[in-house]
Length: 149
Image 1 (cartoon, rainbow, N blue to C red):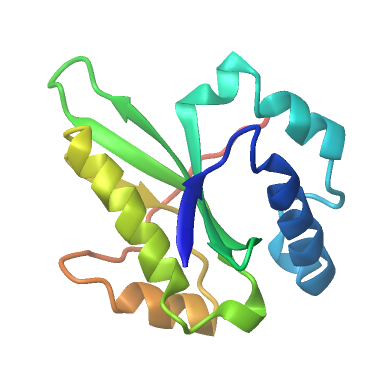
Image 2: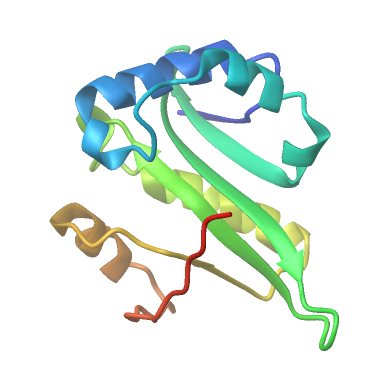
């Protein structure tokens, strides 16, 4: 298994992964289509450079990814990370790929002095099993406010 940060050199592999994921589990995706042109533009757009996607690649094929960004609190200097997305293609699950992606993410967190990370987790059977296996982590049913602009 190889891990690479998403960029112009591997964006086409990433798009193929998105198409596969959309075909296999459309209900797990946050959109109805793969916007190829949009992805190609965003991978070069400075706004998205603060978001990191680490790809899990096996035999030249993207089979999973984790996407995250860092931010901090001015008042107390606390440094945090938010995991926007983690997804492994169904036929590659239960092989340690998601753990490997989180391992790459945590290495980046440690290198940047991050104090804490969090995510809004899925609550299906596989996700529950995965997140309950995290050492030194807590799970909660946190209230959430979301407003679309």
